[in-house]
Length: 161
Image (cartoon, rainbow, N blue to C red; front, side, top):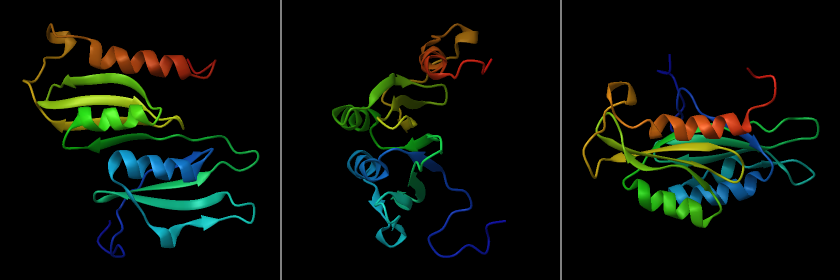
């Protein structure tokens, strides 16, 4: 699987359907140094985007505007960055909400999470600036789990129990 991919393509690509795909493209370019694949931009006669692609490092995020009758389908995305705090600060300056402050994580990396204005949740992983933590079940902090748990419970649809 994946051996016959066209050049520049990946085996699996995340896709998000949002209100304001063009603005999300700008957010990804400014926060994650993404580059839109201009040749992939496909506007509908109304001007809304039915397809767009933004390359972040060696990966591609696919986007579309929500169409009448469609639900929004935000994505959960994990991104490796050089400096989680720097990226988190850029995102917050563009109206993202911090879910998890930069925290040493179990594997010796730093972890942070944010929710962008379109509802996508981004996990930021970066080289550790401090030592690794131990999981809460081994006596460490519960913050890494509880910060995400609180956010997801707040946006859950009633009846999703």
